[in-house]
Image (cartoon, rainbow, N blue to C red):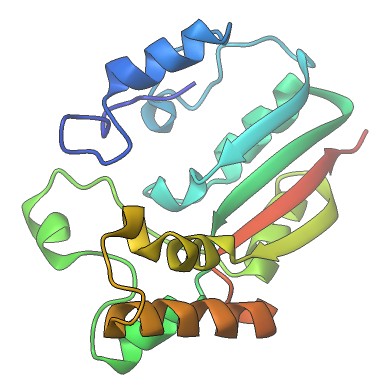
Length: 196
């Protein structure tokens, strides 16, 4: 289920048509739905064992509790929700603040629109609190920082940078800090369990 609105020709992840073709080619049923105004998922009660909500809640223009409630409704008792999103306390956000820049919202995108970026990022503790308030037990909360290690290994997007460039030194530095300090890693993954 996705609205696919932000997947246009300028999206580095590809177009909506490409995404839908890839999903359907793997046997995944795709439903076009902008959840925010609809506030109801098009599935019956207790229809699924597992649901994923990957990098979505930060894009909602308000509280994600209604969506979590809907996911809880469509999960069977004991079903699992995998929730992920960016860590609001990640190292790169802290560095942007130190440099006097906004850590999340690109200014031009915000004031000129259409706006598809992050309205609010959450800390690991806040993700756990969202699950609890949404009626889930929290089975696990993990901080993940592999993106910067991957960028370093591949010289930041396809070996476009010299291994000795200042950019690569910075990329390796961010990767090293995230490896040593889990609290500042980029992503948070949570496992919630529908109780009752």
